Image (tube, rainbow, N blue to C red; front, top):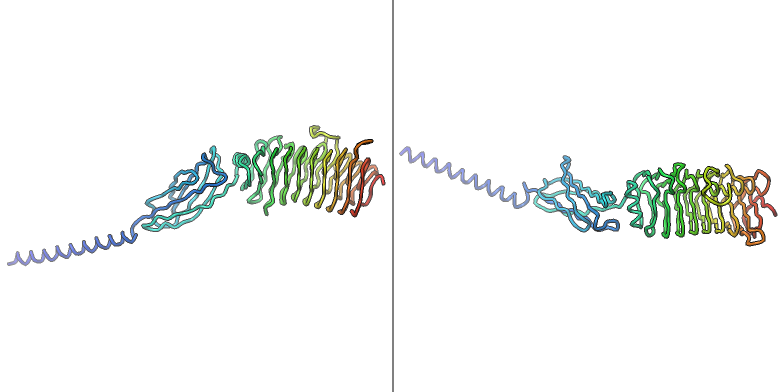
Length: 400
């Protein structure tokens, strides 16, 4: 009888154990079905972009809050898939390299949910942080964003289509060679224009800040060209439009700030100031020590606004502007002041004797407060020149 009772108790305990195990199984199965205790997945799409070519390799990295990372490589237009991720917050970083040069960057944060695969699209930016990246992006053409100060180990050749350099913060491009920082040919090229300052520092070595031949160059606001050893901007058979910015503290034999030979220069705004002339380098061409701010030979200069000021050092003719041969100077607005030279402190114009004259047409603006050491044309010296003043404020003109 006792053994029957014991067996009966055992059967009851076995039934209870079975019931508990069944309930546990049902519980975990239910949790699994609704995603509890499951890991999740993440798919990161890498879109195609202007700067990404077939050879651009993207590294996609995901990291959890503890710093654990996983990385995968894809090409543009593909997706990187990460499985078996513990649910939680993850950071995603994307870096694109071409020829082993980083040019594309992106980042985002995302939540991974248990039992689900999350899709993420990371916004990408094409940014130059190194000389190699800047060189590569300029070759591609279009807008090139700069995110860091960069030391240029050689001059940059601008051959891409419609190249525009835009800083994403205050940026300095420092020259470390005697080549021009930018050499522009058969292209349209512009510098700056954002809320941040872009500085081209020639480091007193660069032959020019920007050299332009048979192309178009636009200088925009918040851009500084400085410390170049042979003119800040050098133009030959090209067009230069200055909409803003500053050209300052550059040195040359002639045309300390801007040198134009057989080209067109339109100044709408900005400042050309405190450039100087020196005979340290005779490669700039033209006459010796002419045009502290601007040198124009057989070219056209129109000043619609801005200022040309404080050119005083080492200048024989044309402290602010020197215009010679068939050169043309037209002033609509702006200020030319604080310049000095031996002759023509503000502006010096000299046409071809018994030939084509230089031309000077003044519609507005102010040319005052300049000086000449030999008392010839403190503000304007005009010889063999067709001179017309229709409304500018000019303190002195010689000979008149």
